[in-house]
Image 1 (tube, rainbow, N blue to C red):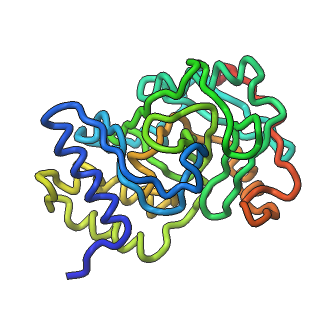
Image 2: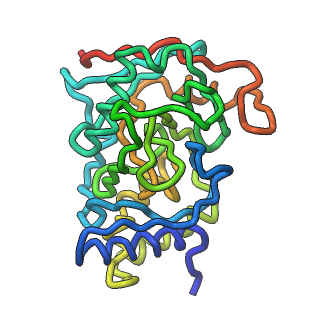
Length: 273
């Protein structure tokens, strides 16, 4: 039987956390493969899940990130030297992350900062005042905990998520998922999950962690499913993905930093009309 390559390792660790969380609240930490233990970064490799708060809940058929945006919702217009990126938020699922981003934006914290780490077919990352990936802090005066909502939010293309250097180390850095396709090996694993929803590992079924509609959406729109459970998704681009695509294609140096600065000129917070 063909079995689950890299993404299955992620599924296994996520299932283990779900099984543990059914007994009591728990936090799982693992050895990081980041470039520095102090650098806020996201990895283009598999890691285990951290702080799964509601992983055992079933995902509804309507995926929240692709639901209709409503009048009066608070949104962000992220103005860059490449164009505007419009983002909606999910306050109920990630209240601390949303408040952190909105407060920083209103206070001008992000004005003039750059997207310091850009990897085509992966993501664009910004929000660090030092522009190195080593800086930035939250509005709370200390790193804050992950807010993982597997029953509602995933790293689909266009997801806005918190960058971190490990469990519960969120500061000011964030990233937007740009990957618009799932490669053949990941796609085969997702297809396997769709066809084997009742399969169990550590007492948890596949459908509890990777429901069929989530797998189908990843195949349809792209994303980074291996980051689910590791980073806090708290928003979704609803307009301006063409700008994200432009940024992803800029020339970078050996550290994935754009040769010419990609600048966040300002972030406007307003109500959707």
